Length: 166
Image (cartoon, rainbow, N blue to C red; front, side, top):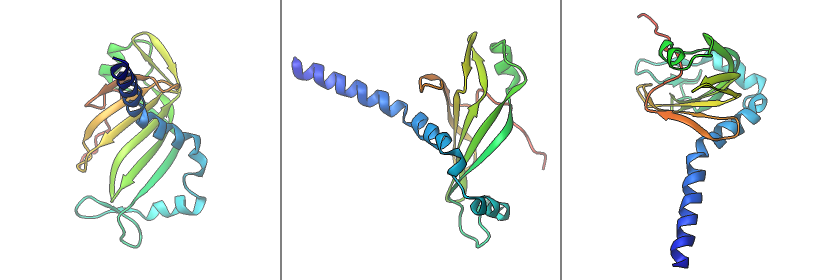
């Protein structure tokens, strides 16, 4: 009986930390925000381009593997999110980090100034979006500033999608 209880506690703790692993990765990135890229590395991102297959490449044609930080972004909430969660404005200021692996944007970390969910105000929550190779959302997660999972979805439930006409 003792072994079963110990095993249960170990599994619970393992699942708890595994669930918040995404938060800790994003939080560590935001804690190191100003040192993610040197000024030279950041200036080199201007030369990135998308090839015919839709992969991001550097100036020397290598597939991009990089985290790029952005500050002062206006994060626009979707109308459906605002309607379901009164108390939110059109959007909020954020910092965000785009993660590229093998030429594909695979993750986006947002640190939002504030968001209201179910009448609860969260200051500095972290919103993470996971993308597949077609840049479609696989999953999104919203965490409090302390790392508690507020909501997860298989959609980008928080943000207004910006469409570009081709």
